[in-house]
Length: 142
Image (cartoon, rainbow, N blue to C red; front, side, top):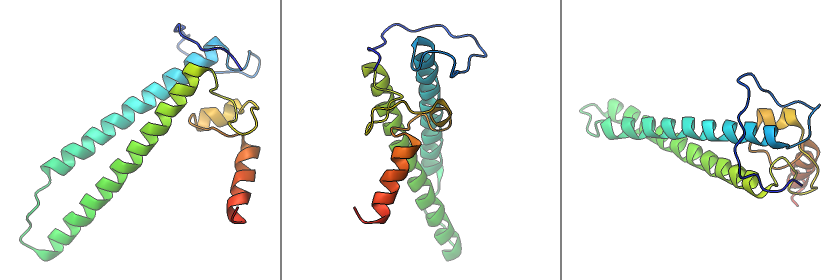
């Protein structure tokens, strides 16, 4: 696995990781760092919007149906906020893996995680094969 990357690299605006370059080389690591940090920033903004909505929501409604609807909306917003908070935690863990040089490698097998998988799910910690084995084990109750 690569050593810790401390220095940031400037990427071309249209850069996209390629199978033709060194896996988790300087450019790929910086690309995924930026992708994760941007995602985290977007999620933090969504959480702030949820908090603003919840603060602005009137708690008293004269109609019982309106109150029930408002409570359902509030519960949905709170669940959404909790999911976003958990996702931010996973992003933070991925950023930590970038710093320690283990990002992009399966935590179970040590094999590289395919770029397409990381592109689609940058917080992935398992290869598709390891994920499938993990899910099969869960279905069997292991």
